[in-house]
Amino acid sequence: MFSNLREDVSKYYIKALSLRSYFIFKVKKHHEKSTNNKLLMIKTYLSKTSIFKAFAAICIFGISISGCTSKKKTPMETTDTTENELTMLVGTYTSGTSKGIYSYRFNEEDGTATPLSDTEVENPSYLVPSADGKFVYAVSEFNNTQAAANAFAFNKEKGTLQLLNSQQTGGEDPCYIIASGNNVITANYSGGSISVFPIAKDGSLLPASDIIQFKGTGVDKERQEKPHLHCVRITPDGKYLFADDLGTDQIHKFIINPAANAENKEAFLKEGSPAAFKVKAGSGPAI
Image 1 (tube, rainbow, N blue to C red):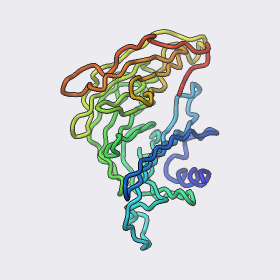
Image 2 (image 1 turned 60 degrees about the vertical axis):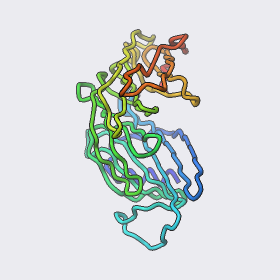
Image 3 (image 1 turned 180 degrees about the horizontal axis):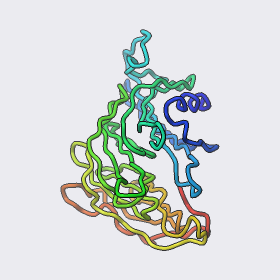
Image 4 (image 1 turned 30 degrees about the horizontal axis):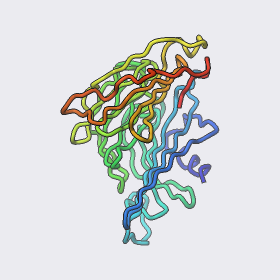
């Protein structure tokens, strides 16, 4: 099934990306009366530079709606989904001919993907939906002041994205982004930092409320010359955030303040105890 998916996706502006040999899947299902919501995240690891920092993300959303018709439609008319169809978002690098983010109707049974729309945004190498699926947040991975986090309103049925706004990350090469409650967090690879953005009521991002900078080096002088924050993840209970530092062989721990929001301006993250966990020298924790 996924070989077909790779073939279909490769036709649409991401031929410059070199797929590596494995996928990681995360499946989340919610059951509500007549609606079955699914979230399937496929993180596809890509080989772009010698330090293996480059990767793209594919997010797949699906909603099964009662009363769907069996009438055949053209690709652009196919805006509703059935039980075996999901709406898929593909983030890319835009140094070649790619425009940015592409959406598809993905069929779980036969692995085919039908193009729906495209959204112009630079280097959206990683993206994530909000918990309610109404918004999508994507990085713009640059090694300069163009590095940013972008907020989009998302129409799951039509597969369309509307840019709400962008905010500078204050750290170069944001390569990972997550949404948690009223905040969005990025891991900034070359910046050696993580950035926290409060979410406004309309889903847009406010300027970074906190940029946490790390220090240190690792034993590999080529790729561990400084901190390289590669990933941020939240524990299932929502109490802690862990940040993988490829550059210093550490996993940083933070306590989450779930009450933090744009109005009260409370800090979202507090240093945990211990502040970090050391891993094998040279192993470079990434995800």
